[in-house]
Image (cartoon, rainbow, N blue to C red; front, side, top):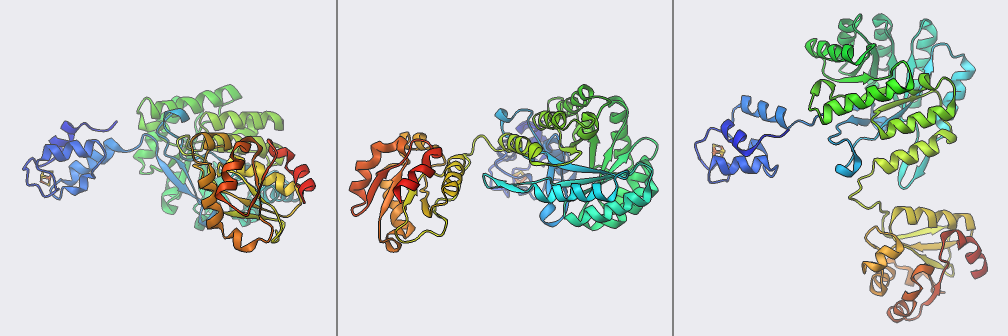
Length: 446
Ligand code: SF4
């Protein structure tokens, strides 16, 4: 909870010196409370007051950066429970688990699957972001697997309840900003020492939420505040309940003891049922897994899971857009048709997918249409004759083309006359209503 203007005022020197640019300390305090001004603007505020203020205004859930380079990601930092309240900020990460019981062929098969499932959807690269290597009893196998999978360049999550093995493992991957999981009440001090020495995030686990709560406080007391909470319960229902309880306690209860990201071993809960694994992982995308551990990755798992995640973790207040410009398909020539659609990302990806399917060279012109669908942009006045004329003129297409054919979406056939007036010399053709009809349409057009 933020402080009120009056509470902030009590922390100021109350001298009304005006050095902050405000006539009084009270006026300044009101602005700070509204978020319009930083407290640092007052040069006379004490460090103690600054500390109090930053503690009071800190988000209810900590944010951590894990991984290095291209693999670097943020987790945590959520301020609301539901997407419609504001927005969810750091999407859950997917980790693929490697137990030390796996043989070399099984490890290679998973590595190949991780490499294979990597595709773009609406401007976002979809793949498993992390690998989790878990020590059970076979230290040699565990360290060998870690050596192998750390070559993938993903976020490395090391799981070991044995602190001496954990230390050896972290030493191997310490430059990748890994995560260390497996701290419990018996090994806490040793695990905190490893995490603190390497400045990495430490994962805590306990049999019950009450014991996990105590463990967080103990880790905090031991000096380590960069934590992830393993909320995996004995069975699916318990894991879901734990994960939701932890997030609720932090966001709505304001209890910072549970203000940390969570990790759930979905692979263990699903017991080899990959459909159950995907269903449970999807549930945890919706209800508050920060790192979701899967037994493997495949397109069957990835397509529903990553699609859902992208839908939930986009800002509902910002339209998903692609860059307005000319896109080329199949090396188009000076007599290839120019297709036209809007800059709403979903529309673009559906239309471009169908043009690719048609295997017929074409230009695709995307004007700045506000990031809405075809009919919405048209109704909002953002996809009319003058907008399209400007887009054509700015695209440079007129200089490139010998045959000027502009194919407009069938749903806005009504624009044909307007565009013909705006673009003399162009043949304006009404295209299909639905994107799936594009391949047939282009075949007949060329
Ligand atoms: S600079 Fe600080 S002390 Fe001076 S008026 Fe502003 S808030 Fe008050």
